[in-house]
Length: 238
Image (cartoon, rainbow, N blue to C red; front, side):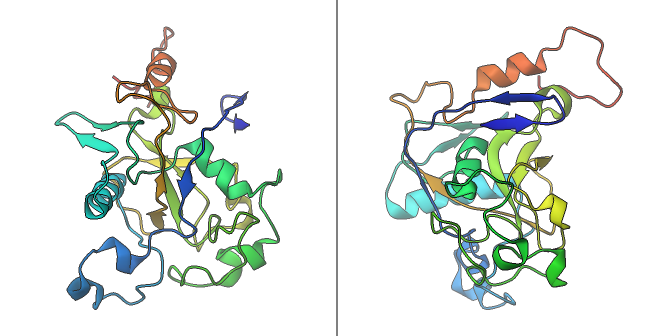
């Protein structure tokens, strides 16, 4: 069940089977280059300061390295997801929420100090993955450490192409490190405490399918097509 407190809405999503990494992509994995990796302070910490555009490009590169069909195509105007491809990709919001809950129903899967790097720990950088307790699905660091990019747009009526972030970061307070919290930023934005977690799994029969796993291009455009005068600062999806 996905809830949006700003719009006061909720919707139920039925998911197809998918795979998701037990940890965020590590800094050493993200660079793909041993020479550059040697200059990193902590190769086992999550990659951070990652743009959404760089995350989807990494997913394609990882797919090509494994010899599987990439999930994304790039044009001058946009990045397109092929939901019939089995390549590495960003999780949708519904997939991320399902995975982070670990079978539970609450705002987090355990006491925050035991499961997440947050402001309670008073650290100044992302920490080595897997050092806090996992959830019941065996996933580490879905809360705290770094915010994680999802495929979905944050709010296409208000923020256009802004993409969704979930989970909270190493300096975030307790209220921000909850499964239900939604944040977002521009696809080309570089933010210090932002990384990503890779998913895999074809969820449609054809490349022309309208998304999946709780996300739809048509639904985004319908939500963005507001017929009323737009409040100041709104920049809907075109």
